Length: 81
Image (cartoon, rainbow, N blue to C red; front, top):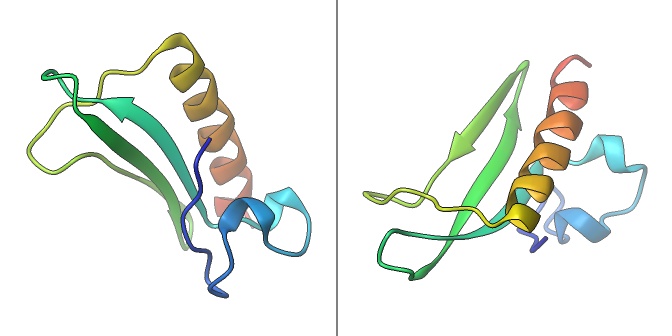
């Protein structure tokens, strides 16, 4: 899974503290034209927000679906806090 910046400016996957404190996850995907894109998962207060490629759909590989599942589960835990 690729990372994006966390709230403290550090990459979210490698920020200090436990994994359940992350606020951003980035999942690799492709659009229907097979161009490389990202699907971002973020926590905004008590909500989990999915941000897809602008104007595109996201096609996920089996590995991408697994990454998305982990990101959504972790984000849901974080949103409950």
